[in-house]
Image (cartoon, rainbow, N blue to C red; front, top):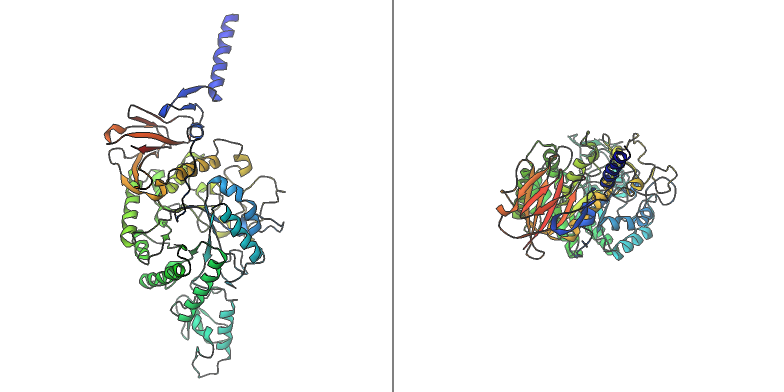
Amino acid sequence: MMKKLQRLLCVVLCALLCMTGCGKKQTAGGKESAVFSVQMTEFNQGLTKVEKDDKYRTTYEIFVYSFCDSNGDGIGDLNGIRSKLDYIEDMGFDALWLTPVYPSSTYHKYDVDDYYAIDPAFGTLADYEALLADCHARNIRVYMDLVLNHTSDDHPWFKAAAEYLRELPEGLEPDASYCKYYDYYCFSREPGEGFAKLEGTEWYYEARFWEGMPDLNLDSEAVRGEIRDIMAFWLGKGVDGFRLDAVTSYFTGLPEKNTEFLHYVTETGRSIDPDCYLVGEAWTDRAEIAQYYSSGIDSLFDFPFSNNEGFIAHIIRGDYKASDYVKGMLLAEAAYSEANPDFVDAPFYTNHDMGRSAGYYVTDDGPVTKMAYAMSLFMTGNSFVYYGEEIGMKGAGKDENKRAPMYWSDDPDDPDLCAGPPAMDEVKMKYPSLADQMQDETSLWNWFREVIRVRNAFPAIARGRTEGVDALSDENVAAFFRRSAADGDLLIVMNLRAEPAEKDLTQVGGSFTLAAVLNTNAESITYEGGKLTLPAYSIAVFTVE
């Protein structure tokens, strides 16, 4: 009886050792890996970032109002961002896009009162300059949100134009030589779609978003001169480029005129600073995005791959084949490169105008959300990640909910926590806070760090061109080469389904060395004799000899 108990105890102890990851086994490339889901951490531990001084970055979008509070007023600010640069750099990001920081009466600041100042709630111009200096010391670039479609109705330009029209004697026509600001906006005596009534007059002004955001007359040479001065001011302060808001709305319904204006802005920025980077928000389809690329702009956000109903979401849900991910990238690269051979794609998955990705997959407990974001980060170009996505924050419905405070910890007295937009509903998070996820090596946060680590270690991921591998791609697996003469070729194989997959790489010509792995569960990726085994929702990255 005692011997039976001893044997039973031995079995139990062995099982416990396996469950806690103490057991070891040989895996791909001859590297030893834990049985537990930390294979990627151990296998990838020797990877280091390859520094590149170019426009291909990994960019962190910060909605300033909700990120980090440095002075206890509940509002995120510039010094709060400065205090988190260690965190941002450790994640692997090497660029920041800050939503507008100009003075404005709204929390989002997209209705600008003054293009040459910082909103007092966010800090001072000196604080902004200090943030730029701190970022540049870490090789982190900073992109400023440049809102050119409209101003606030409190902007001095609009107030002067409105006052002029209110005082204009009856029967006289406006004359810009008496008030130049009249020509800065689009006024009409007739009401029309997208126009608002100018209080106290019989005049109307174009305001496509809402009456508090009067649209600028971008045909005006005087307005274009103002834009040049604004860009020169901020580039002179050390800004590395601009995110251009609402480029499809510059001239509503007129893509050709939008493209011409984008060309003007692009050439203006480069005439001031040849390294000025420009990325535009063109919330439209691939064909129209390609048309805007003919302006010569560096980047345009790749909206077709984003959001709850975008290409990535449909593929990871199984609505489309895994191989369609490769086909989608090929179509995008072909269309954009034809319009602008020097294009730098700007893939992203969510932003401040979209519901957060953790809410896209109701029954998912992590793997699907992880893989979907990896698909975005493994596209070419300058990849953008919205703050809080790295910890699976939630937020949907009205805009305020999508801009909830960064979830630093569960401690209500944490001084970094912001109060959030005034009209925000209570947002219940799906995943733990950052403080908790930092203690869990299998967390979403640790996955993000590993994905970005791999992206930064292999420059061809961002800088190469995609070539499909039909022999390996199917309903469940997406396989493609990322070709780069400067940085070497890669073979990337993704299992985008919940079942394991096996692939025979001998079907593809060439010699491959497993160089990085990304896995979401306790099973390890293995590669031996040309046979690749991919557990559910996992990625293998090979260098090509």
